[in-house]
Length: 253
Image (cartoon, rainbow, N blue to C red; front, side):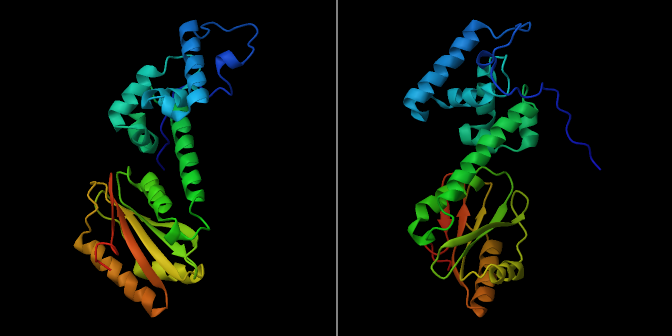
């Protein structure tokens, strides 16, 4: 069995150094210029919200928790240069994050915690909601969870007879240009959760959401299998980097 990656970063402190009464103070107390900088960032964020900070400063705020005694601005800039933007940093694969100098277990924990929180908030906006009247929120959620992935992922959204979203499930993961999908399993799961309708979603890591012949064939197979059991396939959405494609809107269904 393969061994987990070896991490060398110090364990994550519960509080920042300036927030804890350390008596006596250990060697290497946080320099005042770093401490004052962090305080100013927090004040600006609490006063003006996210709009008051550029991406690198937002990222600094996240990284403060990972290392209480180091200037995190260089790492924030390095991460943004490597992964493009704030969302790209949060959604980057662990293996690629570890390749960035200065990234260890604590940094990854902070980034993935923020990513998970954002996805849960977005998911809460659509679960148990009438999907056809929450379409923009649904697309936002799909882009947040899938647009930055470097491999394909296939999800199925299961709806009840009122088109309320009752289940959001990952059905498969694949490579950069293929994900295995089994129509029989998709429909079988619909029966298990008592779904009356489906929405298929998958991403194209290339960034181009144009469907391949295999995408079209797979979609039609699921539509036929679902229709035979009285289940409606509302749509198949392909998520690209900056836009999506709807099979229904573009005439593929």
